[in-house]
Length: 81
Image: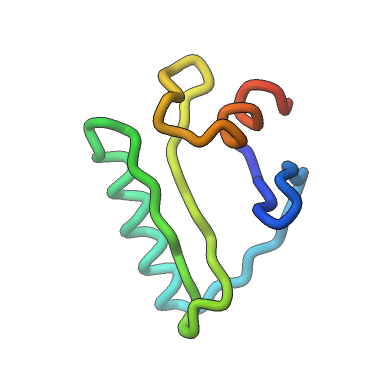
């Protein structure tokens, strides 16, 4: 698991996420899509109602192909333990 802070370009060790029911339903749909995506290079953005907050989710395999990730994410995946 990697938690990446877009504001600081650093990884975090832990966070708390509080979601409304409709956001959980949307997140569950995105997770199912990630697992069924044959190319494994998709990502999804979960936003609150006014788009002032966002969670981006993606599936990665540290030993797999990472070319579809931006350099900052590749570094976080490969360097941050």
